[in-house]
Length: 377
Image (cartoon, rainbow, N blue to C red; front, side, top):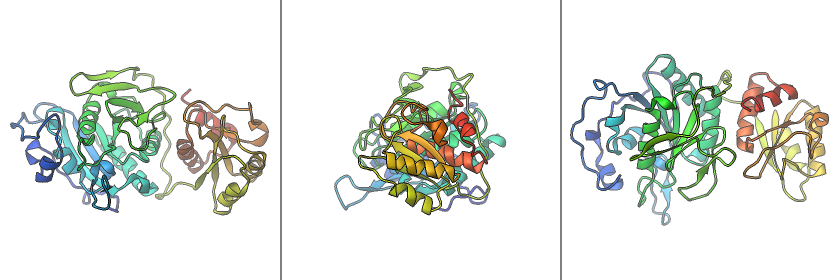
């Protein structure tokens, strides 16, 4: 894994021209036909084009084929600079600078990389180095990274996270189109004030709602409760379905160090007992998120264990393993009596992220925690 760094000395700075397309990209990727070196375009800076900073983390979008099986690949093998150079026409949209934050599959995404991303983005905005940010990322935990950054990055400049379901070496790789559209969105003035957005497969999704819905299909990312906030394509441009003004977004300070408090997700199922909850507590969990059945419910023995945990000062948040819908207070479970918090629309993985940030910020009273979960509603 590449060690994340926010230092100027450690950053790779390279303003990209389409003339620098590497040989492997010419043979691996096409976008709308065979890739050809473009005619030298008008200088981006002179043309007043927006400045886009690309922060690469690895993932399938940077993957290359592996001989172990048909369709197999290794994540994070191609740099962000190479990725952006392989997509024709980006120099007409923006002036692009690429930096490598990590080179990992998103199943290995961690607090250290999250903190490096958050600090680099905030530094770039505070110093006016960029008009928009793009993060290249694996799809498995893309929604969690998007939600984390949405809660800690201050400002109204666009942050777009993008990935692909097929690696760079695949037939009909979806990475080039997704990257092109991510730049379109990040460079569009109408993208300001919308928080972190995920752009994949011609759709723009908000960080709070977006989730992965299929293991392998390129049509995997959706927002079950809200729907997309917009659509984008290379021919028709961008169509936002909601207004950016008035968007509510709370932001939290990053805690000291590079690690968030330990919060466990416990998955509910038939014939569930208290063992997973007791195990989480024994390993030092400061919070427990229940991926409950239905409206965030679980067995009596598990609920009893969660109530006992709450009485010990461990934060308990009820979410649901069901793909869509809200978890509501005091309907099937007496949340007021038990000292529980409900996740509202947040799925378990996002409820975990918010719980970590709140605990790190010293918010531990159930009533105050509940306000944070419902703040945007």
